[in-house]
Image (tube, rainbow, N blue to C red; front, top):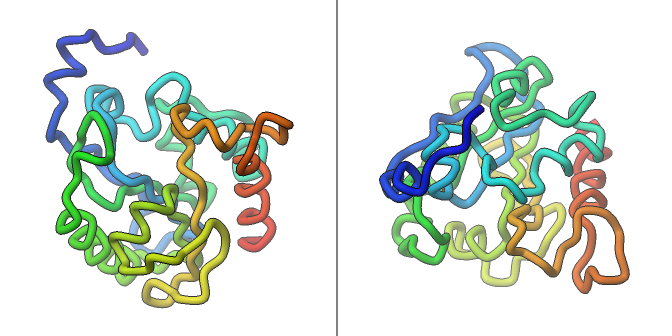
Length: 191
């Protein structure tokens, strides 16, 4: 895949990236939800596409995928019972460009997706956005007591390379923790 140009990235503001979901009636074990697409992802039409995003390595190293997929291979996820969506579908340069109303509307959108596709788990990558979207100001990383519809809920750290408090692998530099460790905890719970 050829990387998008600066002009293509700039033009992607406000675009949408289609959800990656299994066909109706196919199992959906875990539905991963980002906050919203970044401009690089919107320019490519692929989730977690920006170089330096750690979603794909964490997904593989935690055992969800048999090898590390490239963003262009996101279409392989449904065969593994996995899907990807976003709380807010509109692409922005930074998540803080989203309004609280957009995040709350995204919570309703996620609830509708859960009702339609019946995932066992929904894993939201970004605790701050989750707190706003779902009105849970004290939510922390990890499993949640509440559910979205019938889906159990897990909050993951945001895998963006800008989230320096979380390293990919365990490290003394990680003052918050390891993405692989959190994804692995979810993998173990999801079976």
